[in-house]
Length: 207
Image (cartoon, rainbow, N blue to C red; front, side, top):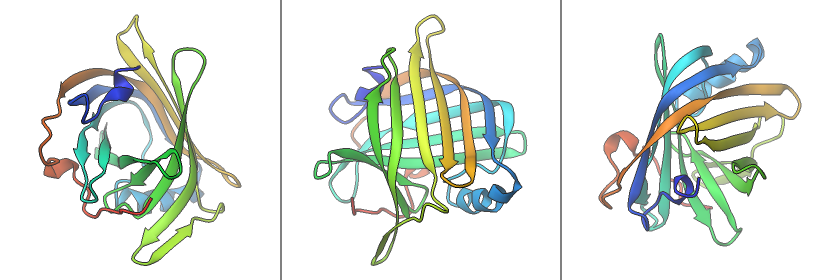
């Protein structure tokens, strides 16, 4: 777990994870339009299924604002075609937390708080989801916002990371999530420009 969460420019390592999500799910019919809208910018997953092949790319880079950032590009190979869930993470020294910019255009940003789970794993909780477009910088109302909880741990017997993600709305309940495992391969980060396939189309610099 220490190496997994030390991927970055200082370590000169990137992580490529390959595995299977045992289950990908979403809430009732009422959430599907919102999931489809988010999927247009690689934010949400409007599909569900079992035993879905999965990859994740954590590539460190220096963004246009001069900050160290880390990609979280997740690809789910559904039978009807792949779906991506993209994010780029930076650290905010001012607020003492991580900031996750979501999707291809980074219009949504949320604070993340990481803590140990007491059993060798980590729990990541989202907070303070904001919409940022041009001069607009506003909190997303609880009525439509989602709260994410991520559990991740290393399974030494299987030599795999096990992950569970659950996103819920405070009023309407479960929105979507997935759980499964992946094996990690570490590669030199190289320190060069971020490959085009991993690069967001728009960068948001406000934290």
